[in-house]
Amino acid sequence: MNFTIRDATKNDMPSVLELIIELAVFEKEPDAVEVTAESLVEDGFSDNPAFKCFVAEVENKVVGAAIVYNRFSTWKGKILHLEDLIVSQNMRGHGIGTKLLDEVVKYGHHLGVKRINWEVISWNEGAIKLYERKGAKVLRDWNVVHLDENGIKNYIENLS
Image (cartoon, rainbow, N blue to C red; front, side):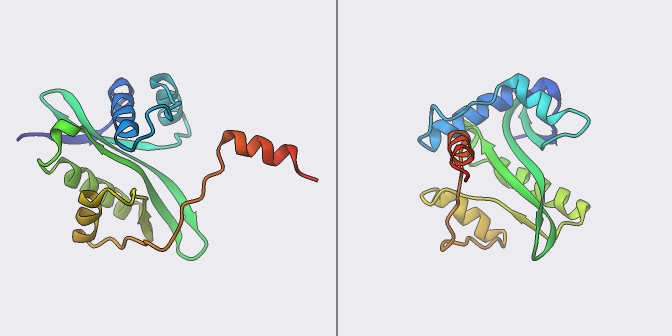
């Protein structure tokens, strides 16, 4: 299968949003997506973008995406966070996810980061095996902690 990996453009954001929604359904969180194509354009293509996105394209159709942003580690220094690596369900198994990951790693290397990190849901064994084959360490004894918008509001209201 022929596909291309490239930097995303503003015009790709409706397709990227479709992939984000597909991922949410896959991860059993179908109602969790709050971003819009417009907010993706605003947040990703402003003077100070919040993220960078790579897309995979087959016959001029976006079938995969990788979304990354810069972070800082107090132990390591500059790091890159891979927020999501998404390949449309019907396009999996063709090496698209691997090539998107390759692009993220090349980008991180170009930036001179000390680490690239991301999360993977515990039951996604296919992804876990891919990441381990590529040399990533899956830290199974760490827990991800989220404070959502409502939690932030409650936290602030309860400050003494």
